[in-house]
Length: 253
Image 1 (tube, rainbow, N blue to C red):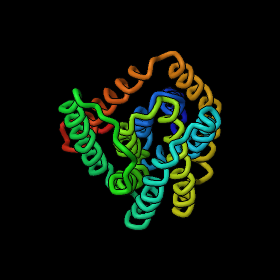
Image 2 (tube, rainbow, N blue to C red):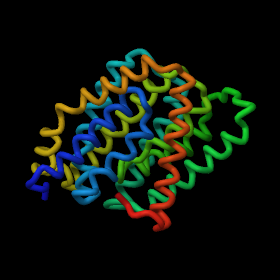
Image 3 (cartoon, helix red, strand yellow):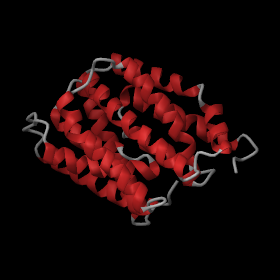
């Protein structure tokens, strides 16, 4: 049930704005906080169902904003694996264990940031790879299904490619729009996109373009080095929070 008072919207509106800003230019890692934030007032499964149609709208806005900005090789190496990861999660679990997903994403994110820090003096650009694209794509699709937490695995794959900030965001937009279409089908089949949740989604819809435009505006006013630094910072902070929640040292939001 959606709370009858204003508490739900006091939490849900900032969550939608944060997700929009992530899609608009600040990176999809930031959007990982959306479902945990909304889970303060409603069950996580319901939060994920409410936000999913809005994520798809945000993806469409991002695709328009970053039209023509896509790294085809990166897309070819990761997207099929993302589809496979979503399909595995949908078939194996009605809803993956949120705590296990948090622990997995958190540990991998922290390890990635640690190794990137070790080679900070040798930031060589790496080519797109089917091997790593398949690995991170399957993991990204799997973790994206339950709590829309595919941002860290996908970002871990894209960051070493050293794409321009606009190309980075445009490629992410194609990846997540494609996955979210698949997830809409899966969520609909399990009955999670019921009328109550869709009404809540429609109520929050006007805030989606605002968040995307805010993120896009920040992207155009910040240097590329700052965008990448912010992405690594977000990945480290979110990885730490998710890891501590996964092992039970922090309460899940």
